[in-house]
Length: 276
Image (cartoon, rainbow, N blue to C red; front, side, top):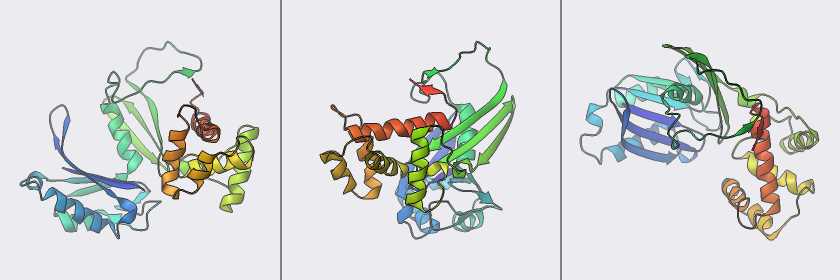
């Protein structure tokens, strides 16, 4: 099968073989989604790459695409991209059946396949909250949250063997302050954006430079040579630079304060308790 993940930053194409107990990744192509004229152009570019491996596409009998936006009647216009993708468009190109779903709906389907004992798949974190000693259950609800180009959310519930998955656009709910600093942040973002901020305006990759500007303008950390250099970088390079400078030895104060605020928003807003 051909599996496609269309995000606001990258479009990932993978040819995958399904076995009895696992999936095998046969080939993988990643393209910058924002630089494509259309999804069809991106798909054709990926297919040309796959054609360099003789016989690779011959066995592909189905396609599934996850897209970063709401899906209606087999069509999706990703929130952070200027073009639309549809099952009809893909099927016309590939000549095989295609399914399209929200990206976090797709991630939710993958959660039950994770091996909780494999550190490469799941990283356990210590959360300072009341511990419960309830035994593991074969039913329950799990939330899936991810800050990327936007803020993706979804959730799943299951009472084995039944699994129910639900997409969500919860990242576009209003940002809700919870203390003095977050209240000041909401006011700052409202003035910068010209509207009341969504959650993803404070919690996503592009939000990190916004938080950095807030930290500097509020006087919570002093400007430095590093912060000045970062401010001159292209917007898409600033998040990684801020994150890197926050863990250097010594860490840049404004960058460290920025990432501390980012994770405070992440933990508090998603009811994850206080992070250790």
